[in-house]
Image (cartoon, rainbow, N blue to C red):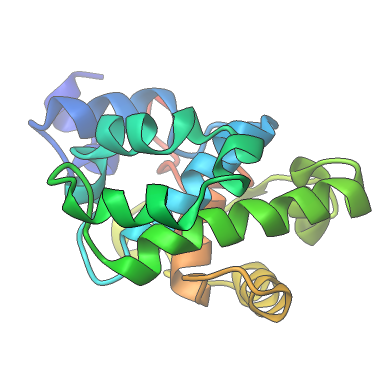
Length: 187
């Protein structure tokens, strides 16, 4: 199938950063705690904004937050986080910036409790991928029972910026949910 003929790519066609994300990361199964933490933070940063905006700032986020190393983010000081408020490469929202440290500290606790962040996350789907095999983008939901349960549990634990819609996007970003259309060559 030619690049331009895939309806699955319609939401970002022509943007090389988003094309790369769709083809190589989005809805691809991932079990790496660091990557999952990165996606959690980026999804949280996207609240109220477009995913395109966040993806175009991804490298600045990686630089600012130690490559999303969980332990390094958990140890960031208030002064380090305050300094990021002047970084034009980031969304300069204090609550979002400070949530990275708080979320890292909670992820550390989840790693102790469940053995890994990955085990905690995949527990919501009983270790199975959720594949809608949608035929059109209009069929794709924006939230699900799994995203609602995950969001509620994450909120209860103190993780920030995790409503059911953002959490559904997060599930796609780490591959628990595969929402590539049934005919997408990148599924």
